[in-house]
Length: 239
Image (cartoon, rainbow, N blue to C red; front, top):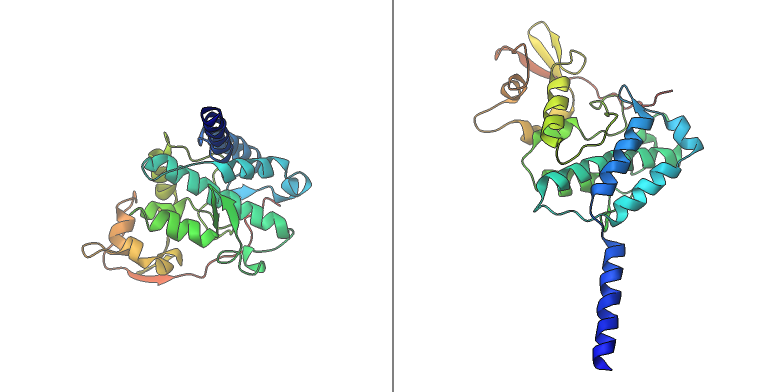
């Protein structure tokens, strides 16, 4: 009898755990299809999603029960980058139509999302799940906050196998974009991302211009002074 009860308990536990946690492969496949459908030229088709959010809701349901670990850093990073970008879209849709993510009180620091078995805010994802665990400044060019001032959202999912290529491509694209890195005479104007997260771009041996030049095709003079232009918080909407 004890053996039968133990076997039943073990079966129930295994089945229950498999329902709670699943491998991230299905998440990446669904996310890739979603971004390919609703994102183009860095903009999100919020109006279409507002009419039919089923695919986003299904994707976030998968993300809720997906299991990732820092022991597999590429899968972990790719999952949380996608999860951040999807959560931003979900947060916007819940209040749509809006002109900016800042129209939603606590959008980044109090609004919670259920992802990978955790209840997290957008700031939690960026600062605790990613920045606190990895020394990777390129995260700032793939985490898209829902505003025009952000680097553009791409129409594909970040995946473990392609992550290094994707991080490099998006960083090079941003740091060679004259609208993002603005040269004006003896001054270079940077996104406020470089002010808010200065410690991610500056080290004992490298300043902001050194960081930029490691990705730029046309190098910047070390004599340039640095300024920051105002962040454009208008919604990155297709319409």
